[in-house]
Image (tube, rainbow, N blue to C red; front, side, top):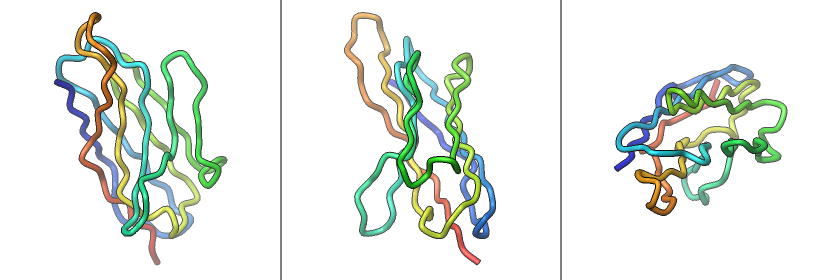
Length: 121
């Protein structure tokens, strides 16, 4: 089994910055994608950014130029640097990973429990 634990959420003022971290642990054989999604009350969960292993990063149009995703593959950790935060960025942010626990097992999707980000004056 694979567990994802997020950290770094909190309350910040508009224009401020926050850095989210997510560490994957457990019986991990390989990870081929990690990223971040978010969900505000009453809204659908939406993609924020992904970082495929060996591929190009992807960003939602609403965060391009403000957010940066990065990975430390040795630690199975993904980060999201969020700058110039806006009130509309307020949401629960969920860490995502596509991983396998054995070479012969199929890829499975794993989700963290979420960390709250609130942008308010």
